[in-house]
Image 1 (cartoon, one colour):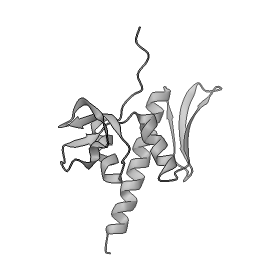
Image 2 (cartoon, helix red, strand yellow; image 1 turned 135 degrees about the vertical axis):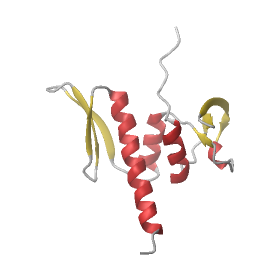
Image 3 (cartoon, helix red, strand yellow; image 1 turned 45 degrees about the vertical axis):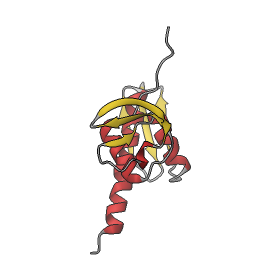
Image 4 (cartoon, one colour; image 1 turned 30 degrees about the horizontal axis):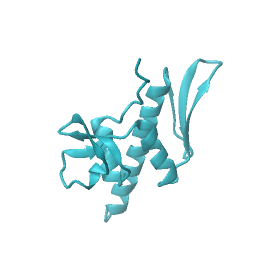
Length: 124
């Protein structure tokens, strides 16, 4: 029996991670939204819009905590039986599974980061 696999980022998350500066090596990459196994490297160095690294969601979240110093977490509420995520800035989400909470947390972090980058680049 094969060990369980960690969920990978979606193609959309992968592209946003590339735009955010994610530079950790990965074995998997997306090319034209197709998931491909490759050599262990930073695929985001490839100067092509259609190619981006495809890390496990847990690795992308670790990158946010380590590199972007984002205080975020996923936890379980036994009284309600639901998972939720939190970001220190105050955003919360509630989900039926741990994996969906992790993926939504990554979406929230990416949207927040990309939004702040766009605000910084806005001359008005």
